[in-house]
Image (cartoon, rainbow, N blue to C red; front, side):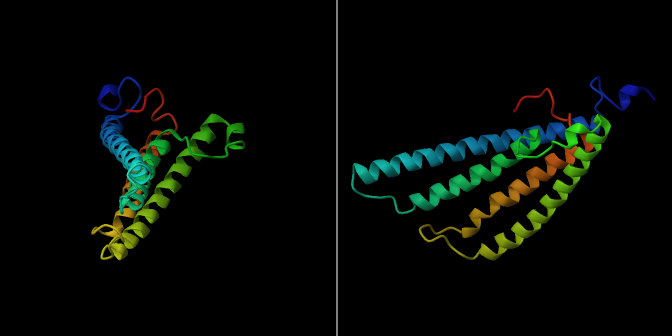
Length: 178
């Protein structure tokens, strides 16, 4: 069996490359939704300000909708930070260790983070189901819409942490976002 059957030129296995490709597609979709939600939030707030100060009226659901858009934008963006490890972390001691040990600690941390995302998903699923029958005060839609992005975030982050556990700290090195 040739080495090409197991890895590509960069040393990644074919299953890892395939998994990364699927996650890239998910990232693109997520990024697009973040852009749309941020645009909707911005337009809604601008229109609300115009209505209040120029027309002396108000959009009843503007505050609730802008908060909902904000929640969606934040939680859909979190996995993009997880992908590149740009969230706040303290690595002073880890950086003093040998690279091989740093790699092991990175993978253990990613695995622990993935386990935390499973717990977060389970708890947010329960919260979403609990809130489902409840309606928003100004809109005839379920209040669970505030919890659904937490589910999406936990699932998407889980996939990133899983692939980083598998591929190590250099999984996304050299790749640009989207």
